[in-house]
Length: 484
Image (cartoon, rainbow, N blue to C red; front, side, top):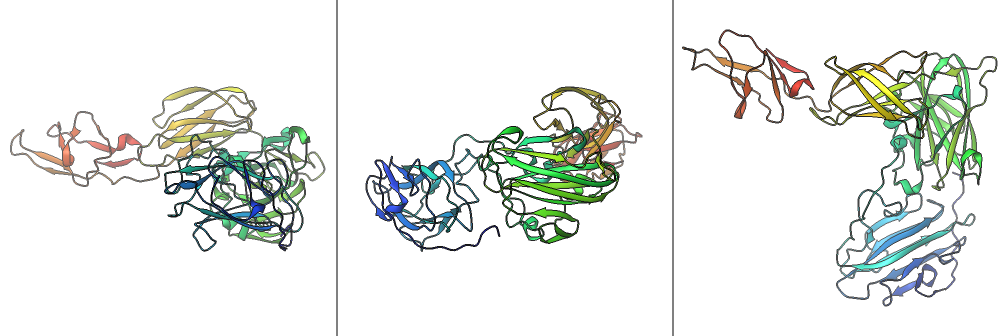
């Protein structure tokens, strides 16, 4: 743990104009709707150490419900400083949510959900706040509204979380190219913590605001990487607490995301199994070491933003070029994100390790062998995405990067359709024979070779020619369920 939790109750009282200050405690029955809910420091100040407050806020009008729309939120996080919201007029009601490491749902205009609101018949909400004896933050400010909707109104708008906020969307890090800098994942990105298995099997005490990156080893040897997080680009501004864990080696980045329980860490930089290195200190600069990396191996980095403040993270290989140092493979790397279901065309090919904010013409052959060409621009991490793809193998993927070979990606459907089975009744004359797909799936499209037959209701086949053999593929070939 970064700190030892201890709480000493302290009481201060303050109510500013049009503000309901948590330090006032007690129950507020009037003048609530349209006011602002703030921490003990008010809208412009920090809360204090050793706070332990409880307040109940009720609506002005019977039949309505208190609702909070947060304007700002800056709390150290559990188990040190945190707010808890309860249904009704006391702490015996259902917990609506606890907010510290996790921000209130409307901060950053998350993509779904509702504001923090009461669904209790009283329309009231009870809030408690606790802070430990050391670091204090800016606190919070929330508009109080009264809604006629139990549980709160729907949050408008929305943000798209960074692709690399989950392991499967990890970006690539080419250490040989110098410093990799990218915007961190912040509380305003509305991103869930990394899986609990990560915390359970590393030295991390928590894993908020995750960002995932991988490297491919191009030359054998030790790889030492500095990880720095600051509020400004290029190491400027104020340092932010950064934590990390490293896993490997793996045959591909996808393999790294399958199971986080095959390694463990007993403390900082003391890891076994697939867990390679780890640190959970309060430092803004950390150093990760991968010993004796081998050519073709992949290693996965998880970098977390404990404070949740917006900022920038830089990764720098500090031993590049030294005797015995390894290096990374800097050729573009392709990763496939499978379609969500059989026949879907929402598959993606993600190509990393390109120049940031740069236009590329990417050529490739689709699963039927047809040449394709798309013009795409990379994002700030040097990654581009070919979207709208169905299942199948995409070959000869070429970004025109000198000295690098073409790539290949296979996308697999999330759901395999039933294999079509054709049952035929031989005709006594040319007109009265029948053929049927006996395990017919009405969601699939059936394609016949040679062309001509069609599938009707219930799987009945029409348009077949006597004496001709046919092959049928379910779902236009995407899922490759074939019968003859």
